[in-house]
Length: 277
Image (cartoon, helix red, strand yellow):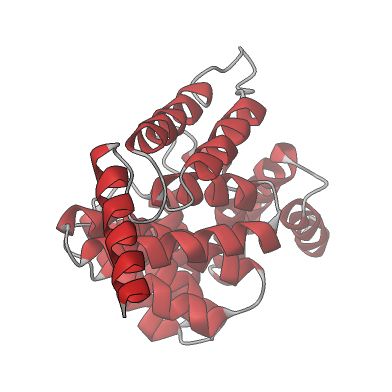
């Protein structure tokens, strides 16, 4: 008993000393946490360092976020940003591990701090995109719905657009239409949402509404919208159904001019041969 009391007293004294010294119960000092948080910000800053061609300092950002995780293994933001960047680079396995860890950390933090709910929703949406790219549509759909229904999430139109994307993959076209209409009602300038809505209407054989949606998708007044190859392809398909062969050929030429080597570019070329004058 004396030994037990002695050990307990020593342990309590050590914990008290660590607390005074600024250590958390996870073994990470407050200084390390602060440095980790600073590295997250440094990583975001590196992504703003871009040249005239739009090439940004991604390598430095990755190094900063990896260092942030080493300093504080429970830094959810570092896991989220690093996972999202690796997703963009196609490193799916490592990205998935990081994003799932971020979700666990945010879920834990959200029990005491509601400010964690918004980044939790964003991380769920990002992981859903990864799952869509690795043919796990059902799990992705669940994550997209969770993100879309989070009232603190600042960009729910992205999640609703992804709900529609997943439902399109499952051939649930009317359900997809409803989700995508919700997406573009929230953000009328969301050209990807309009493109997917046009696809949904196409599969529902409502070519008039499909054309209207795809016109919105390719609105040149919105930066980048007219560079969406999928939208050019979908509008060409719709115009073929509406017996507008000349205008369909114009759309297909735009599509090919963007990138003749992509999957969409090759599909546009094949379709173009079928409607050649």
